[in-house]
Image (cartoon, rainbow, N blue to C red):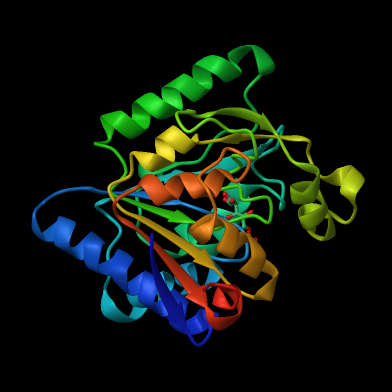
Length: 248
Ligand code: F6R
């Protein structure tokens, strides 16, 4: 893991948006699609804001972009304002020229009976698209990436998962109470994420400094699933000073 530390989250976000935009343009120049794995939550908001600005002001086109989101609550309606489907359209997809058919977000409405097949198909679609060129990640205080909570296997694939208590507590304000936070989610696996050719994890603020230290300097363990990134050869952590403050 290679760390890059910025004065603040704005500077870090601009840096990440620039890398993504450069990749999209390089692929477009070669007539290729650019396959992006995307995250939700507070960490990537400014990255999406900057990509939207580049689309409007600099003509950055998303016509050659195919996206796969990491996760979605389960069960969850698409038009629920807490859904990751809603989040992605609000922050990115509604403001750029990505073809609707190129957007993939785990579907929180599939029936329990269809869930396993659905998850297998999500994996197949990532492979059929040529695999993830770039995976954007945040990190939860449990050490989750996507919603791969402690105990996740390093070869895990897209599947349903029970959310950790801490993860639900962190989500409670947005849901106006812990009792309203879904207990489950659909998430890409650690194995899915590790196959990405390039991974960038962002963490901002003091709140993330402990888990960032454990992830970067701790032993590789399923108890902190993000530590599996230590074995990925092309991963960068983009941090602000506060998130990096405990690193030795
Ligand atoms: C979101 C996701 C999660 C978040 C993590 C951090 O799609 O996969 O792993 O990245 O929970 O969330 P924030 O950025 O809100 O601190």
